[in-house]
Length: 485
Image 1 (cartoon, rainbow, N blue to C red):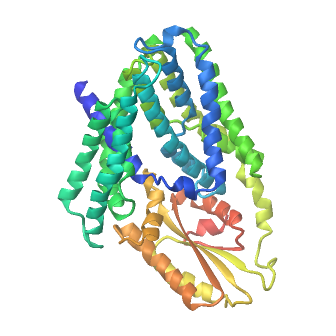
Image 2 (cartoon, rainbow, N blue to C red):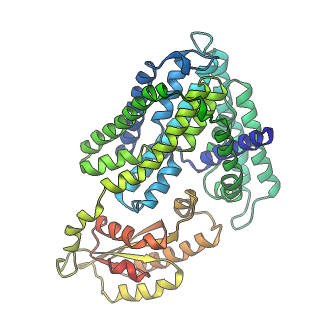
Image 3 (cartoon, one colour):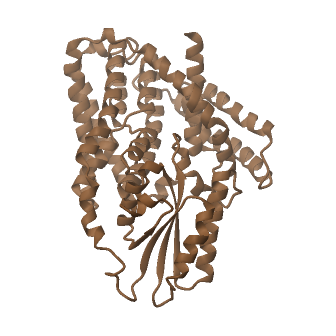
């Protein structure tokens, strides 16, 4: 059991480091107000409902080492969070990953995830200072000093390593080992100053430069951490869950809180959606998928139990509720959301109905580089001109794996101008470069490149919806079933 505890702790430490590496803290500035407001309303309302509801619970659910204040914070925070990896997999399963709804949900979940880890750090700090009315000033100053040290000392040193490694060459293994050793060191520092080790690992991951170095670290660690170490953390959490401690009356206190907090999240997101003129049924769907729970809630509950904020009964109930809530999201959304009813207007959008001098929009799906010459020859046959232009949405199809990071890695590499790191991104670079050259040497052509993670059985339905939302009149795909939808 001791070995499992150690491996599980190391797994969650390095996973939070990877979350920090992959998270773009500038996303809040770049994203639209729509996603930001959805993320905020999706956290604030369920947090308030969870906090008010937990105040009504009897004191026998509170851990022996803290007051009711810390208990309220942890229960409320566990209800406010949204798990980005779980939400991404749900959207992929529901074939909503490529839709406008899916894009809004993903961007909102990324913002929500960032705020959740920040609130968790504050909750841990306040809980450890729970013996007094205020958190000790030394703890706050120590955390501020640690963040400043990471930004102004560690980050410049890591950026130096990134700059001094020629493009196309591998990073020195000694440098990679030193960077990974910093995960354990930062975790030890934050644990020593009164926060938690995973917060130090997360902050350390945030200061890693995005692009070539960040992608290399993710590629080296992702499979090992998520495939071996992280499941051990789940096993350890399962061992801690003692279902025999749950008493029947507990459900009468917990279930209404969970239900009202989930309803508050759906209602808040629905109001924001209606303000931004998103259809009400899509607003409800968005609220439902934003209720996805996962690792972040399990981390919050584990930390609450280890700090004796939650007793065994409260921990077991919240773990069961987390699993059940996530399990019912997919069938609920499937029963409620029917995207096929919007395809009637899409079917009227054909070449015959297009105006002669209007811009002709086409979607071209490319899976491998050998699909490119045929597609370009077909596009040349349309004879585009400045009076009769065409707009081409070039969709590079990358097969979806179990990792959520693969959805964004190609875009990051191209935007930063860094060297290509693997075969998949090399193919993406060749495909997009070919169409960019076609745009440059052909008048009246505009190219909008996209990269979409997909699974082949789900390709038809997903891209039919993408074609409708992009108002395309013609759709070319290397998969026959996609053009026959």
